[in-house]
Amino acid sequence: MTAKKDSVNLTEGPILRQIIFFAIPLLLGQLFQQLYNSVDSIVVGRFVGTTALAAVSSSGDISMLLTGFFVGFSSGASVVFGRAFGAGKLEKLHSAIHTALLFSVLIGVGIAAVGVICTPLLLRLVNCPADVWVESDRYLRVYLVGVLFTSVYNVGAGVLRAVGDSRNPLIFLIISSVTNIVLDLIFVVFLGLGVMGVAVATVISQLASVVLVVRKMLVTEDVYKLVPADLKIRKDLLKEILSMGLPAAVQASLLSVSNMIVQRNINGFGSTAMAGAGVGKRIDRFCGLVPHCVGMALAVFASQNIGARKYARVYRSVRVCVLICTVFTVLLWIPTFLFTEEVSGIFTKDPDAIAVAVRMVRVMMPFYLFQGLFQVYSGVLRSFGRSRMVMILSLAGMIVVRQLYLAIALAIDHRIEHVFLCFPVGWVAAAVLMMVDYWIKVKRIYPAEDLPQAQE
Image (cartoon, rainbow, N blue to C red; front, side, top):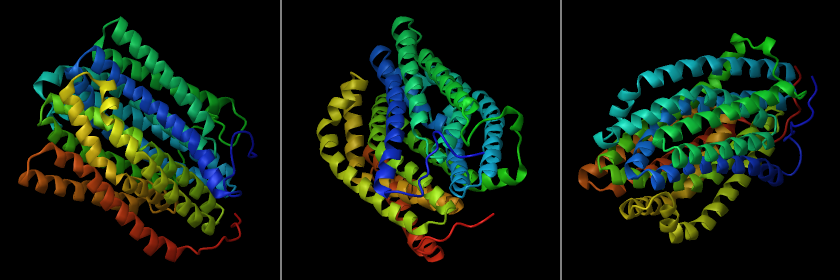
């Protein structure tokens, strides 16, 4: 096999330009993904009602408990793909891709089945109120059917990004997003299917994205070509992929458990608070897009350069990404504070829910730089093979510190602002721990210079 077509070598050239040009399609793709997720909330909130919006919002962290596993697994697997590509080990790359794809299908079927069966239990875990129970149950059962599609798509898109192609995943997400938006309007506004219509639209759009990414891998002649006859699990490669991907998957799932506990506390304040917090989370996800995509771009960039043993280039890229996140955070503060109420009004007409969303965003906004630092340092640490340490440090900051703060703060002063503040408390703790590990461990182990590429 020879590297050609859509794959991009990130081991040569200007760092800032490469990271920005690689991150822009990621950002646009995530923007469209958040857009169609937000359209779900907008359509439900404005055409069905506050209770239906609360039902969709309360299901979000539950769905992330299951889908987060695949997102984490694919991010870890992408490190293996990127290292193999950067080192020129194309046969290993081919086998790793087929191993990861088959594994994602098998585990996706299992988790989707368990999720659908256990929906009532999951809703009880988040203290879902009686007035939104029926709608939440309907939405979540249908949504979880699409977990299989989420699993396969994330691995497939991770393959493309690992070889430097962030353009095609963007195209697939745009098509999927437009499909979801059109179906939302048809199913909810014209057919009156309510939250069930939103869930069905989401599953169909997820299926569309899977069809697109699999088709691309089947027809390409690039290094990531999918050959159905080669879909088999190589135990040695699965072990390597799991060593990177399993900690990230466990981290994502346990973080979702932490978020479910937070959601349980929000639910205790009633359906209006649930709806308002759901809107606040949508705005938060838009605000976090740039740090998230910079972290994703850095993980791919660093993986290729670590495979090529260009460590000095990796360290320079970390500084570049920290600078990008800092500038973005400063530019984001003023418009977010000024226009939060207007943006919240797009999602719902309920003034009480809007007030909750505004309080949430303004509590979290001053700490966004730490979210960026968390994304940057977790991405580079995972690229250096410290996926298990990233998991441990993330859980320490995002779960232990967050839940300790939540328990103590609510015991002293039972206000919803403390629930909102627990999110940035976790960002700060996790970011500081990641930075300490990077400076004390990684920079002592790997030389701040580029080395000759190892021969197989």
